Amino acid sequence: MSNAFDLVVIGTGSAATAAATTVRDAGWRVAVIDHRPYGGTCALRGCDPKKVLVGAARTVDRARRMRVDGVTGDARIDWPALMTFKRGFTDPVPEERLALFTSKGITPYRGWAQFTGANALRVGDDELQAQHFLIAAGAEPVRLPIPGAEHLVTSEQFLTLETLPPRIVLVGGGYIAAEMSYIAACAGAKVTILQRADRMLTQFDPEPVGWLMASFRAHGIEVRLGAEVEGIEKNGADFRVSIAKSGRRETIEADLVMHAAGRAPALEPLNPGAANIVMEKGRLKLNEYLQSVSNPSVYAAGDAAQAGPPLTPVSSYDARIVAANLLRGNHRKPNYAGVPSVAFTIPPIAGVGLDEARARAQGLHFRINSRLASEWYTARQQAQPVYGFKVLIEDGSERILGAHLVGPHCDEVINIFALAVRHGLSADALRDTIFSYPTGTSDIGSML
Image (tube, rainbow, N blue to C red; front, top):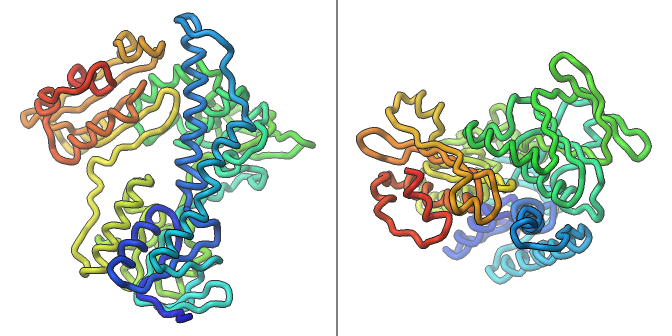
Protein backbone atom coordinates (compact mmCIF):
# COMPACT_ATOMS: atom_id res chain seq x y z
CA MET A 1 0.00 0.00 0.00
CA SER A 2 1.37 3.40 -0.99
CA ASN A 3 2.11 5.85 1.81
CA ALA A 4 1.98 8.85 -0.49
CA PHE A 5 -1.12 11.06 -0.31
CA ASP A 6 -2.46 14.33 -1.55
CA LEU A 7 -3.86 15.14 1.90
CA VAL A 8 -3.24 13.71 5.35
CA VAL A 9 -5.72 14.75 8.03
CA ILE A 10 -4.73 14.54 11.69
CA GLY A 11 -7.91 13.87 13.66
CA THR A 12 -11.24 12.19 12.95
CA GLY A 13 -13.71 14.62 14.53
CA SER A 14 -16.21 16.89 12.81
CA ALA A 15 -13.65 19.16 11.12
CA ALA A 16 -11.38 16.31 10.08
CA THR A 17 -14.19 14.18 8.67
CA ALA A 18 -15.82 17.05 6.76
CA ALA A 19 -12.55 18.05 5.10
CA ALA A 20 -11.37 14.51 4.39
CA THR A 21 -14.62 13.41 2.73
CA THR A 22 -14.98 16.60 0.68
CA VAL A 23 -11.45 16.41 -0.70
CA ARG A 24 -11.70 12.67 -1.30
CA ASP A 25 -14.93 13.19 -3.26
CA ALA A 26 -12.89 15.45 -5.55
CA GLY A 27 -10.57 12.54 -6.32
CA TRP A 28 -7.66 13.25 -3.98
CA ARG A 29 -5.75 10.50 -2.19
CA VAL A 30 -6.59 11.05 1.49
CA ALA A 31 -5.51 9.52 4.79
CA VAL A 32 -6.76 10.20 8.33
CA ILE A 33 -4.91 9.62 11.58
CA ASP A 34 -6.13 9.35 15.16
CA HIS A 35 -4.49 7.90 18.27
CA ARG A 36 -7.91 7.56 19.87
CA PRO A 37 -11.12 5.86 18.69
CA TYR A 38 -12.37 7.42 15.48
CA GLY A 39 -15.05 10.07 15.92
CA GLY A 40 -13.48 13.01 17.74
CA THR A 41 -14.37 14.94 20.84
CA CYS A 42 -17.91 16.09 20.09
CA ALA A 43 -19.35 12.70 19.15
CA LEU A 44 -17.48 10.65 21.72
CA ARG A 45 -16.30 12.80 24.62
CA GLY A 46 -18.09 16.15 24.46
CA CYS A 47 -21.20 17.70 22.95
CA ASP A 48 -23.27 14.63 22.13
CA PRO A 49 -22.86 12.55 25.30
CA LYS A 50 -23.09 15.72 27.39
CA LYS A 51 -26.41 16.66 25.78
CA VAL A 52 -27.80 13.20 26.56
CA LEU A 53 -27.04 13.77 30.24
CA VAL A 54 -28.33 17.34 30.09
CA GLY A 55 -31.59 16.04 28.65
CA ALA A 56 -32.06 13.71 31.62
CA ALA A 57 -31.20 16.50 34.07
CA ARG A 58 -33.70 18.85 32.43
CA THR A 59 -36.41 16.20 32.59
CA VAL A 60 -35.88 15.63 36.31
CA ASP A 61 -35.57 19.34 37.01
CA ARG A 62 -38.80 20.26 35.26
CA ALA A 63 -40.73 17.44 36.94
CA ARG A 64 -39.53 18.68 40.32
CA ARG A 65 -40.45 22.28 39.56
CA MET A 66 -43.92 21.21 38.44
CA ARG A 67 -44.72 19.26 41.62
CA VAL A 68 -47.15 21.90 42.88
CA ASP A 69 -48.51 22.50 39.39
CA GLY A 70 -49.95 19.12 38.49
CA VAL A 71 -46.99 16.77 38.14
CA THR A 72 -46.64 14.06 40.78
CA GLY A 73 -44.07 11.40 41.57
CA ASP A 74 -40.44 11.42 42.59
CA ALA A 75 -38.40 11.94 39.43
CA ARG A 76 -34.75 10.99 39.85
CA ILE A 77 -31.75 9.96 37.79
CA ASP A 78 -30.58 6.35 37.79
CA TRP A 79 -26.94 7.10 36.96
CA PRO A 80 -25.87 3.62 35.73
CA ALA A 81 -28.97 3.37 33.52
CA LEU A 82 -28.30 6.85 32.16
CA MET A 83 -24.71 5.86 31.32
CA THR A 84 -26.03 2.84 29.44
CA PHE A 85 -28.39 5.10 27.49
CA LYS A 86 -25.50 7.48 26.74
CA ARG A 87 -23.31 4.65 25.45
CA GLY A 88 -26.05 3.83 22.95
CA PHE A 89 -25.03 7.06 21.23
CA THR A 90 -21.25 6.93 21.66
CA ASP A 91 -20.31 3.25 21.37
CA PRO A 92 -21.30 2.84 17.68
CA VAL A 93 -19.44 5.96 16.53
CA PRO A 94 -15.89 4.61 16.01
CA GLU A 95 -16.99 1.73 13.80
CA GLU A 96 -19.45 3.93 11.92
CA ARG A 97 -16.74 6.53 11.29
CA LEU A 98 -14.29 3.85 10.15
CA ALA A 99 -16.94 2.43 7.81
CA LEU A 100 -17.44 5.93 6.35
CA PHE A 101 -13.73 6.34 5.69
CA THR A 102 -13.49 2.89 4.13
CA SER A 103 -16.51 3.45 1.90
CA LYS A 104 -15.00 6.69 0.65
CA GLY A 105 -11.61 5.16 -0.06
CA ILE A 106 -9.92 7.16 2.71
CA THR A 107 -6.97 5.36 4.28
CA PRO A 108 -7.23 5.24 8.10
CA TYR A 109 -4.27 5.09 10.46
CA ARG A 110 -4.30 4.52 14.20
CA GLY A 111 -1.57 6.02 16.37
CA TRP A 112 0.26 9.22 17.29
CA ALA A 113 1.18 11.42 14.34
CA GLN A 114 4.58 13.10 14.46
CA PHE A 115 5.96 15.35 11.77
CA THR A 116 9.39 14.35 10.50
CA GLY A 117 9.67 16.97 7.77
CA ALA A 118 7.82 19.68 5.91
CA ASN A 119 5.87 17.08 3.91
CA ALA A 120 6.29 13.95 5.99
CA LEU A 121 5.15 12.41 9.22
CA ARG A 122 5.35 9.14 11.09
CA VAL A 123 2.53 7.04 12.53
CA GLY A 124 3.93 4.09 14.42
CA ASP A 125 6.10 2.25 11.89
CA ASP A 126 4.55 4.00 8.89
CA GLU A 127 6.15 6.96 7.14
CA LEU A 128 3.63 9.09 5.26
CA GLN A 129 4.37 11.63 2.55
CA ALA A 130 1.78 14.22 1.52
CA GLN A 131 1.38 17.37 -0.53
CA HIS A 132 -0.88 18.84 2.14
CA PHE A 133 -1.74 18.31 5.80
CA LEU A 134 -4.73 19.37 7.85
CA ILE A 135 -4.32 19.57 11.61
CA ALA A 136 -7.74 18.98 13.15
CA ALA A 137 -6.66 17.19 16.31
CA GLY A 138 -8.98 19.03 18.67
CA ALA A 139 -8.12 20.30 22.15
CA GLU A 140 -7.21 18.97 25.56
CA PRO A 141 -7.50 20.35 29.11
CA VAL A 142 -4.95 23.08 29.81
CA ARG A 143 -2.22 22.20 32.25
CA LEU A 144 -2.86 23.70 35.66
CA PRO A 145 0.16 24.66 37.79
CA ILE A 146 -1.47 23.36 40.95
CA PRO A 147 0.17 20.93 43.39
CA GLY A 148 -1.82 17.72 43.16
CA ALA A 149 -3.22 18.52 39.69
CA GLU A 150 -2.72 14.84 38.81
CA HIS A 151 -5.77 14.09 40.96
CA LEU A 152 -8.07 16.09 38.67
CA VAL A 153 -10.42 14.17 36.41
CA THR A 154 -11.46 15.62 33.06
CA SER A 155 -14.95 16.23 31.76
CA GLU A 156 -14.38 13.24 29.47
CA GLN A 157 -13.80 11.01 32.49
CA PHE A 158 -16.86 12.47 34.20
CA LEU A 159 -18.96 11.47 31.19
CA THR A 160 -17.91 7.84 31.65
CA LEU A 161 -18.38 7.49 35.43
CA GLU A 162 -20.17 4.27 36.33
CA THR A 163 -21.27 5.73 39.68
CA LEU A 164 -21.70 9.36 40.65
CA PRO A 165 -19.65 10.50 43.68
CA PRO A 166 -21.68 12.32 46.35
CA ARG A 167 -19.36 15.35 46.68
CA ILE A 168 -17.93 16.97 43.56
CA VAL A 169 -15.67 20.03 43.25
CA LEU A 170 -15.13 21.69 39.88
CA VAL A 171 -12.05 23.85 39.27
CA GLY A 172 -13.02 26.57 36.81
CA GLY A 173 -16.14 28.51 35.96
CA GLY A 174 -16.76 28.29 32.21
CA TYR A 175 -18.90 26.08 29.99
CA ILE A 176 -17.69 22.78 31.42
CA ALA A 177 -18.16 23.78 35.05
CA ALA A 178 -21.58 25.29 34.44
CA GLU A 179 -22.97 22.37 32.44
CA MET A 180 -21.50 19.51 34.43
CA SER A 181 -22.51 21.07 37.75
CA TYR A 182 -26.19 20.97 36.76
CA ILE A 183 -25.96 17.37 35.59
CA ALA A 184 -24.33 16.30 38.84
CA ALA A 185 -26.65 18.35 41.05
CA CYS A 186 -29.80 17.04 39.35
CA ALA A 187 -28.44 13.51 39.84
CA GLY A 188 -28.10 14.12 43.58
CA ALA A 189 -24.49 15.18 44.12
CA LYS A 190 -23.37 18.07 46.32
CA VAL A 191 -21.53 20.37 43.93
CA THR A 192 -19.05 23.18 44.57
CA ILE A 193 -17.58 25.39 41.82
CA LEU A 194 -14.28 27.17 42.42
CA GLN A 195 -13.95 30.08 39.99
CA ARG A 196 -10.88 32.30 40.09
CA ALA A 197 -12.63 35.16 38.26
CA ASP A 198 -15.21 37.45 39.83
CA ARG A 199 -18.11 35.84 37.93
CA MET A 200 -19.13 32.66 36.17
CA LEU A 201 -19.28 32.20 32.40
CA THR A 202 -17.13 35.18 31.46
CA GLN A 203 -17.74 34.38 27.77
CA PHE A 204 -21.33 35.65 28.18
CA ASP A 205 -22.81 39.06 28.89
CA PRO A 206 -22.76 39.63 32.66
CA GLU A 207 -26.44 40.58 33.02
CA PRO A 208 -28.00 37.25 31.94
CA VAL A 209 -25.23 35.45 33.83
CA GLY A 210 -26.32 37.34 36.92
CA TRP A 211 -29.90 36.17 36.43
CA LEU A 212 -28.71 32.59 35.97
CA MET A 213 -26.97 32.58 39.34
CA ALA A 214 -30.37 32.28 41.03
CA SER A 215 -30.73 28.90 39.33
CA PHE A 216 -27.33 27.74 40.60
CA ARG A 217 -28.48 28.56 44.12
CA ALA A 218 -31.87 26.89 43.62
CA HIS A 219 -30.11 23.67 42.60
CA GLY A 220 -27.88 23.75 45.66
CA ILE A 221 -24.75 24.42 43.60
CA GLU A 222 -22.27 26.40 45.67
CA VAL A 223 -20.32 28.88 43.55
CA ARG A 224 -17.23 30.39 45.13
CA LEU A 225 -15.97 33.35 43.10
CA GLY A 226 -12.49 34.77 43.45
CA ALA A 227 -11.33 31.37 44.70
CA GLU A 228 -7.71 30.45 43.91
CA VAL A 229 -7.00 26.73 44.14
CA GLU A 230 -3.65 26.25 45.85
CA GLY A 231 -3.48 22.48 46.02
CA ILE A 232 -5.25 19.13 45.93
CA GLU A 233 -4.36 16.34 48.32
CA LYS A 234 -5.56 12.76 48.35
CA ASN A 235 -6.69 11.55 51.76
CA GLY A 236 -7.58 7.88 51.46
CA ALA A 237 -10.55 7.72 49.10
CA ASP A 238 -11.25 11.45 49.59
CA PHE A 239 -9.62 14.65 48.41
CA ARG A 240 -8.86 17.92 50.13
CA VAL A 241 -8.88 21.04 47.99
CA SER A 242 -7.06 24.04 49.45
CA ILE A 243 -8.21 27.46 48.28
CA ALA A 244 -7.39 31.08 48.98
CA LYS A 245 -10.31 33.51 48.91
CA SER A 246 -10.34 37.12 50.06
CA GLY A 247 -7.09 36.62 51.92
CA ARG A 248 -8.35 33.57 53.79
CA ARG A 249 -7.39 29.94 53.29
CA GLU A 250 -9.98 27.18 53.36
CA THR A 251 -10.16 23.44 52.72
CA ILE A 252 -12.99 21.65 50.92
CA GLU A 253 -13.55 17.90 51.16
CA ALA A 254 -14.53 16.08 47.96
CA ASP A 255 -14.97 12.62 46.50
CA LEU A 256 -14.11 13.84 43.00
CA VAL A 257 -12.32 16.96 41.75
CA MET A 258 -12.87 17.91 38.11
CA HIS A 259 -10.78 20.01 35.74
CA ALA A 260 -13.12 22.65 34.30
CA ALA A 261 -10.62 25.43 33.66
CA GLY A 262 -10.49 25.42 29.87
CA ARG A 263 -8.95 23.57 26.96
CA ALA A 264 -6.13 24.29 24.49
CA PRO A 265 -5.05 22.83 21.13
CA ALA A 266 -3.42 19.41 21.38
CA LEU A 267 -0.35 20.29 19.31
CA GLU A 268 2.83 19.39 21.20
CA PRO A 269 2.80 15.64 20.42
CA LEU A 270 2.76 16.47 16.69
CA ASN A 271 6.37 17.73 16.80
CA PRO A 272 5.45 20.80 14.73
CA GLY A 273 8.99 22.16 14.72
CA ALA A 274 10.14 19.30 12.47
CA ALA A 275 7.76 20.57 9.79
CA ASN A 276 8.73 24.23 10.25
CA ILE A 277 5.28 24.97 11.68
CA VAL A 278 5.55 28.18 13.65
CA MET A 279 3.60 28.48 16.88
CA GLU A 280 2.89 31.55 18.97
CA LYS A 281 1.77 31.35 22.61
CA GLY A 282 0.78 27.72 22.19
CA ARG A 283 -1.23 28.34 19.03
CA LEU A 284 -0.54 27.73 15.37
CA LYS A 285 0.39 30.89 13.52
CA LEU A 286 -2.01 30.93 10.58
CA ASN A 287 -2.83 33.30 7.75
CA GLU A 288 -6.32 34.44 6.81
CA TYR A 289 -6.92 31.22 4.86
CA LEU A 290 -6.29 28.97 7.91
CA GLN A 291 -2.91 28.05 6.45
CA SER A 292 0.39 27.90 8.32
CA VAL A 293 2.40 31.08 7.70
CA SER A 294 5.66 29.12 7.71
CA ASN A 295 4.72 25.87 5.95
CA PRO A 296 2.16 26.38 3.15
CA SER A 297 1.52 22.63 3.00
CA VAL A 298 -0.20 22.76 6.41
CA TYR A 299 -3.68 23.98 7.26
CA ALA A 300 -5.66 23.82 10.51
CA ALA A 301 -9.33 23.75 11.45
CA GLY A 302 -11.51 23.78 14.54
CA ASP A 303 -9.99 23.74 18.00
CA ALA A 304 -6.53 23.15 16.55
CA ALA A 305 -6.78 26.43 14.61
CA GLN A 306 -8.45 28.51 17.33
CA ALA A 307 -9.31 31.08 14.70
CA GLY A 308 -12.98 31.24 15.65
CA PRO A 309 -15.05 30.33 18.69
CA PRO A 310 -14.26 26.82 20.05
CA LEU A 311 -17.56 25.33 18.93
CA THR A 312 -18.39 22.24 16.88
CA PRO A 313 -20.27 24.12 14.12
CA VAL A 314 -17.21 26.35 13.73
CA SER A 315 -15.03 23.26 13.29
CA SER A 316 -17.17 22.00 10.43
CA TYR A 317 -17.27 25.50 8.93
CA ASP A 318 -13.47 25.75 9.10
CA ALA A 319 -13.23 22.39 7.36
CA ARG A 320 -15.33 23.63 4.45
CA ILE A 321 -13.11 26.71 4.16
CA VAL A 322 -9.94 24.61 4.15
CA ALA A 323 -11.34 22.08 1.66
CA ALA A 324 -12.30 24.87 -0.74
CA ASN A 325 -8.85 26.42 -0.49
CA LEU A 326 -7.12 23.09 -1.02
CA LEU A 327 -9.17 22.24 -4.08
CA ARG A 328 -9.22 25.64 -5.78
CA GLY A 329 -6.37 27.59 -4.22
CA ASN A 330 -6.62 30.08 -1.39
CA HIS A 331 -9.71 32.18 -2.01
CA ARG A 332 -12.01 31.69 0.98
CA LYS A 333 -11.56 33.36 4.34
CA PRO A 334 -13.60 32.42 7.41
CA ASN A 335 -16.23 34.84 8.64
CA TYR A 336 -17.16 34.24 12.27
CA ALA A 337 -19.75 36.99 12.54
CA GLY A 338 -22.99 35.89 14.12
CA VAL A 339 -21.80 32.59 15.60
CA PRO A 340 -24.14 31.75 18.50
CA SER A 341 -22.81 30.29 21.73
CA VAL A 342 -24.82 28.26 24.24
CA ALA A 343 -24.09 26.83 27.66
CA PHE A 344 -26.53 24.00 28.36
CA THR A 345 -27.24 24.97 31.91
CA ILE A 346 -30.72 24.76 33.48
CA PRO A 347 -32.12 26.91 32.02
CA PRO A 348 -29.71 27.40 29.10
CA ILE A 349 -27.87 30.66 28.50
CA ALA A 350 -26.99 31.88 25.01
CA GLY A 351 -25.44 34.81 23.23
CA VAL A 352 -24.57 36.05 19.76
CA GLY A 353 -22.98 39.18 18.35
CA LEU A 354 -21.65 42.04 20.42
CA ASP A 355 -22.15 42.41 24.13
CA GLU A 356 -22.61 45.85 25.65
CA ALA A 357 -18.94 46.38 26.52
CA ARG A 358 -17.66 45.52 23.05
CA ALA A 359 -20.35 47.57 21.32
CA ARG A 360 -19.39 50.63 23.35
CA ALA A 361 -15.70 50.01 22.72
CA GLN A 362 -16.45 50.15 18.99
CA GLY A 363 -18.14 53.53 19.42
CA LEU A 364 -21.49 52.26 18.21
CA HIS A 365 -24.72 54.02 19.10
CA PHE A 366 -27.48 51.70 20.17
CA ARG A 367 -30.31 51.07 22.56
CA ILE A 368 -30.69 48.14 24.89
CA ASN A 369 -33.87 46.20 25.50
CA SER A 370 -33.27 44.20 28.65
CA ARG A 371 -35.37 42.69 31.40
CA LEU A 372 -35.96 39.66 33.55
CA ALA A 373 -39.27 38.34 32.20
CA SER A 374 -40.20 35.66 34.72
CA GLU A 375 -43.90 36.54 34.41
CA TRP A 376 -44.07 35.84 30.66
CA TYR A 377 -45.98 32.78 29.51
CA THR A 378 -42.84 30.99 28.26
CA ALA A 379 -41.39 31.01 31.77
CA ARG A 380 -44.60 30.43 33.72
CA GLN A 381 -45.77 27.38 31.77
CA GLN A 382 -42.50 25.68 32.73
CA ALA A 383 -42.49 27.01 36.30
CA GLN A 384 -39.10 28.52 35.47
CA PRO A 385 -38.36 31.81 37.26
CA VAL A 386 -35.14 32.47 35.31
CA TYR A 387 -36.06 33.97 31.93
CA GLY A 388 -34.55 37.14 30.59
CA PHE A 389 -33.12 38.88 27.54
CA LYS A 390 -30.76 41.66 26.55
CA VAL A 391 -30.87 42.81 22.93
CA LEU A 392 -28.67 45.54 21.40
CA ILE A 393 -30.24 47.47 18.48
CA GLU A 394 -28.25 50.03 16.49
CA ASP A 395 -29.66 53.54 16.28
CA GLY A 396 -30.80 54.51 12.81
CA SER A 397 -30.19 51.24 10.95
CA GLU A 398 -32.12 49.18 13.54
CA ARG A 399 -29.58 46.38 13.01
CA ILE A 400 -29.44 43.68 15.68
CA LEU A 401 -25.93 44.06 17.09
CA GLY A 402 -26.20 41.37 19.72
CA ALA A 403 -28.62 39.25 21.71
CA HIS A 404 -28.10 37.61 25.08
CA LEU A 405 -30.72 35.26 26.48
CA VAL A 406 -31.27 33.00 29.44
CA GLY A 407 -34.28 30.79 30.02
CA PRO A 408 -36.43 28.09 28.42
CA HIS A 409 -35.83 27.50 24.70
CA CYS A 410 -33.13 30.16 24.41
CA ASP A 411 -30.71 27.56 23.04
CA GLU A 412 -33.02 27.42 20.00
CA VAL A 413 -34.24 31.03 19.90
CA ILE A 414 -30.66 32.34 19.75
CA ASN A 415 -30.40 30.91 16.23
CA ILE A 416 -32.94 33.44 14.95
CA PHE A 417 -30.85 36.25 16.40
CA ALA A 418 -27.72 34.63 14.89
CA LEU A 419 -29.36 34.81 11.48
CA ALA A 420 -30.13 38.48 12.05
CA VAL A 421 -26.61 39.35 13.23
CA ARG A 422 -24.82 37.46 10.47
CA HIS A 423 -26.96 38.87 7.67
CA GLY A 424 -27.55 42.37 9.00
CA LEU A 425 -31.29 41.98 9.56
CA SER A 426 -33.10 44.77 11.35
CA ALA A 427 -35.36 44.67 14.37
CA ASP A 428 -38.19 45.66 12.00
CA ALA A 429 -37.53 42.56 9.87
CA LEU A 430 -37.84 40.32 12.90
CA ARG A 431 -40.95 42.12 14.15
CA ASP A 432 -42.52 41.60 10.74
CA THR A 433 -41.85 37.85 10.87
CA ILE A 434 -44.77 35.70 11.98
CA PHE A 435 -43.52 32.99 14.32
CA SER A 436 -45.51 29.96 15.45
CA TYR A 437 -47.27 30.41 18.78
CA PRO A 438 -46.90 29.62 21.61
CA THR A 439 -43.18 28.98 21.18
CA GLY A 440 -39.99 30.56 22.45
CA THR A 441 -39.53 32.35 19.13
CA SER A 442 -42.92 34.02 19.45
CA ASP A 443 -41.38 36.11 22.25
CA ILE A 444 -38.85 37.71 19.91
CA GLY A 445 -41.10 40.59 18.90
CA SER A 446 -41.56 41.55 22.54
CA MET A 447 -37.78 41.47 23.07
CA LEU A 448 -37.29 44.20 20.47
